[in-house]
Image (cartoon, rainbow, N blue to C red; front, side):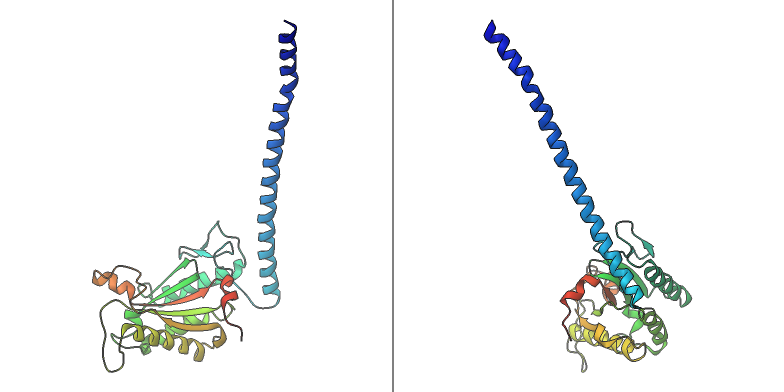
Length: 245
C-alpha cells in the first residue's frame, strides 16, 4: 500500500513536466513565427529601399515578379501577392499601354501579361508584318513607336523575342522560320533603338522560330497566336545574369 501511494504521489509530481514541455513547444513555435515574420519584413524593407533609391536617383527600376510588385493578368491592377516597388511607375505603364491600345484600336494586335521573366507585351505579327516579310508595316510604325516611348523611363533590361508557327518557310531571303523570327525581332529592336532612342545596352533580340509555341499548331487560330513578337520587360532579378560592359 505504501509503494502504491508513493507511485501515485510521484505521478502527480511529474505532471508539471507535461505542462512544461507543452509550454516549451509553444514558445519554440512562437519564436519560429516571429523569426519568419521578421525575415519577410526585412525583405520588404530592402525592396522598398531599393525602389526609393532608384526614384531619388531619377532611374526607375521595376522589380517584376518574385515579390517585387507587378501588374497582374494584363489588367493594370497590382496583385496583392507582390510588394509594390514603384506604384507610380507601374500605374504609368498600365495606363499608357491601355491608352495606346484603345486610342489606336490595337486590341487585336497588342496583349500583355506577367510571367516569371517579367512583363510580356505581345504583338500580333499578322498585323505588324506582311506574310513572309520581316519588315514592319509602315502604317504600324507609329503604334510601335508609341509603345516603345512608354518604356523610356525604366532601366530594366528589355528582350524582344520573335516567334512563328510551324508552317515551313523557304525562300530566297529566309531559309527557316528560325531565321525569320530572329530578323523580325531584330527589326523591332532597331526601331526601338533608332526611333524611340531606347538604350541599346539594355535591349536585345532573339528568335525561337516555331519551337516555343503559345498554343498547339493544330488550327489556323492557334497558329495565329504563335506568330508574334514579344517585348519582355525583364524582372530586375535577371540583371545579375546580364553580361557586364
